[in-house]
Image (cartoon, rainbow, N blue to C red):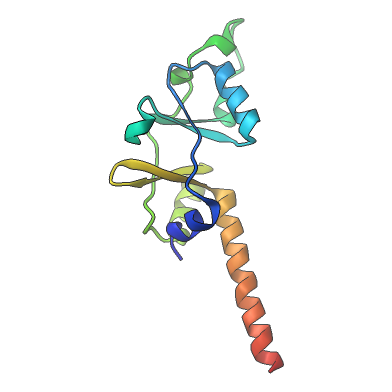
Length: 144
C-alpha cells in the first residue's frame, strides 16, 4: 500500500499558516481545526513548504518563555528541516521514518508542491482497516 491510498481516504486538505503568524494565531488554528500540527507556508498558492509547527513545539518553547510568548512569531519555534513524502511512497517505509525520526506529521509533496499531509494516526488507522479487510476476507473464505 502507498501513501496515495491514505490520502485518497483522508482527503488532500491541509491547514497552513504563515511564518510571521504568532503563536497565539497557531494555538487558535490548532484548536479550531482540532489538529496537532500545521504546515508553515508563506506562499500557499505555490504549494511551498517553509516548515511545520506542532503543539509539541509550543510546549517545548514554554519553559523560560517571557510575558510576550504568545506574540512570538512561529518562525522562532517551527521546524524548518521538514521531512516529506510522496504519494508513491510505501506506507511501511513512511511509518518506519516517522518512528525513527520521532515525528508525527509528514507533508505529502508532488513536484515540489504541497499535496496533503499524513500523520502517524492516519497510517495506523489505514493499516488497521487493511488488516480488518484481510480478516473479513479470510473469515468469508473459511465459512464457504
